[in-house]
Image 1 (cartoon, rainbow over the protein chains, first blue to last red):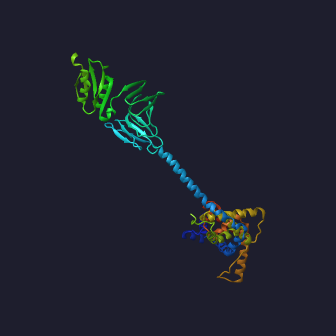
Image 2: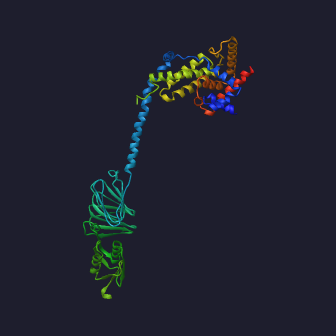
Image 3: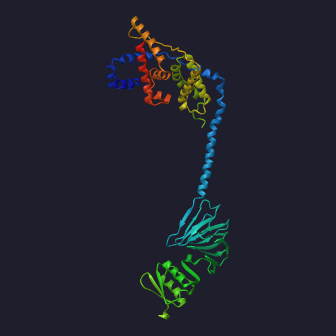
Length: 304
Length: 169
């Protein structure tokens, strides 16, 4: 077995000196060497290269492929060009559908300039998403929360909210979404709202809330007051005003001996709690006290 | 793009011809045992390469030629019985020129011829590629598309068969 392995290696000119020793000591190796030496003396036909090529050239079949060659070279070239175009088209479609997401910080508003110089002021915690690179073809913004829009003139501008969609041509308006409530206030131009399957036109000075019945309120400012760090109300129950105060100042309010359905019209600032409480309570002949750091009590001083 | 070596270019084709023709001729000669038949097969293989020059890259030309020649050979065997015309050439041994030695050499040469003839075509070709051409098992394996181990076994089997035949003559 050992000799057979050595023999196989020897045939491949790879036998080690140790293996050569084994082979040389083996009597049968002589005949193998003799066969090898004799075989190597075989006379081979010598191939004449010049006459061989000439003989090939003389064949009638030899001239055919030369006409084919340009075709063979240009085909992959064409495919490459086609591939580049397909790649460009696919990546173009991909890029234009790429969404841009923006979320306003918890404590401040954020102003967003759109590619056509339309402007969005996003209220605290609001979130919008739009297609930056597909903007010239598709003016569409998704909104969660509240935002004020100043839209440049152009094609239809659409704001999509969970409750309904708002379309305009060029105007300024405010949209507020909260739970299932959608409030659209128009300051300039004309706004069309499609919510719950009903189409409503909102004219300047109107503020519609869509949930679940449509209510029309009037507005008397040229811009929403929250932009100037104020909350304003027109004929709203006191309860709702207090909820807004709780939200802005992170306090809890309690009431004592008063009717929470009292109607309030006015606004309060977002920067000073005492001032805000005063502007709400004074017109209604109420008083307030701050118990501990985060608890506010509203009461009627006459009934004390 | 046009500057890339292509077998369709006459110079490139000629270069491949010069580099490969002799080893291809030997390969066919080992198979056919016939000078003329091996010449025809080699020329036909190169003609096929030329006709398919656009599909074969220069570095694939060698394996294309060997495969094509082998297929052409198998086709000829199918309809033509190969004649045994194995030419043996023995150079004079340098060390001993005594009549006994020369006679023994001649006898051995005849035995070897017969023994080689008794091998299968595959065994004979593999053995001659290894011995005469000095090809490694790896190269033989590449020609036949078999493993290196199988190529080594084929050569070794051929040698053992030759020895056995010679012993019995």
